Length: 96
Image (tube, rainbow, N blue to C red; front, side, top):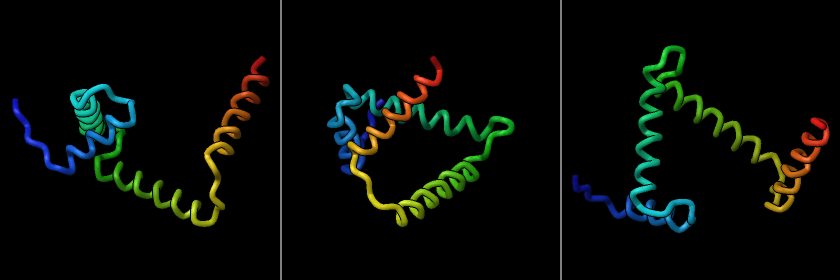
């Protein structure tokens, strides 16, 4: 099978490759297809939301996160990571 990509699609794949997370364009496409399959399967699973319900749910969560971020001062990455690591350390200490 031969597929012709748009310029935007090519740029998207190249951007993903530049992150170093993927080794090839084929791997990027494979992951995308797996996610598409999961998305489509969720629509047919009993008790699972339909695609439109799922999309509405995700949009609501994004809107809520944006609303919170508009009233929260920005945090630099080091502070964020330090806080996460501190919570992991605290959880580890309470388990022992």
